[in-house]
Length: 374
Image (tube, rainbow, N blue to C red):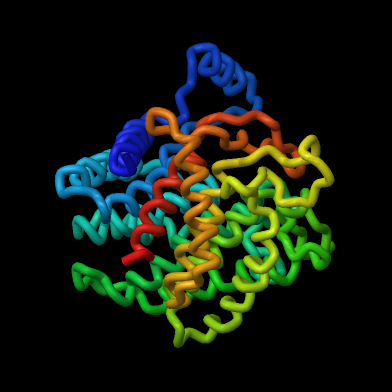
């Protein structure tokens, strides 16, 4: 049964990777009118963050597929990245670098230099990106509001830390600039350190959506489910890719244990987490379960536990319960009951469906949990 579910999810992600987001004719006409009138309009972004999550999920799942199925994943990812490379499409925001993790995996599989050059291009974009006075990366620098968001940690840090690691262990033996490698790792560590300094609620121990360094202002609600997932994703990537001998390892291990020590009380009996991790008095107040937050949180925990080289039966039970809960939400290769995209700080539409941000992290979770069992 599990194999059928994984196969269907993989096939769905491979197809969606090249067509998301689908836009109807009405949307295209409205967007064209906005452009002609000089209004703000949406430009095409071939390496957008939802696709980045699906690409990451596919690269994780590929390692446990048959040779034929893995080849299908490689072909889908190649088509996805070749389109971006051939069009020489500019990177539009921090979000695009989330696609860098699977790009590095694809380079490792293929040895194709165009993928390594693509990764160099992404890391240069991040190293040249505007920073605030503490070295944090503002999410939308053109808005001049100084907002540093939790999303950024899960989009930027996994790529930066994997880039730094691959620079040491290039499978093709190519030479990477050691200064760039060091700068990439340091930039990732700075984002984590600053978020735990400025973006965590002292009372609950849970993250805000973000913060502003200059004013100390906290942004959004505490315990937004995906914010917890984004923060843990960035944190676990440093633990995974830096190693026990790195200077930041012990500090980041403590961050991880502090945060995970706060989240388990919010896991529901069916293994899922709500769209917001918060206490409630009765079932009416209980936050709606969110498969995207659940998959992101538990996948990051899987990665961190493996990096810490430990097998905690209590944690493994929680992960297993979460996986069982997620599998009950899968229909035709899609993971249902994910909360819709956050529209702004504190604006979380209570609309639930199947989205790339539940599909991609679920693929990663299933693959990483299985890997941890070996």
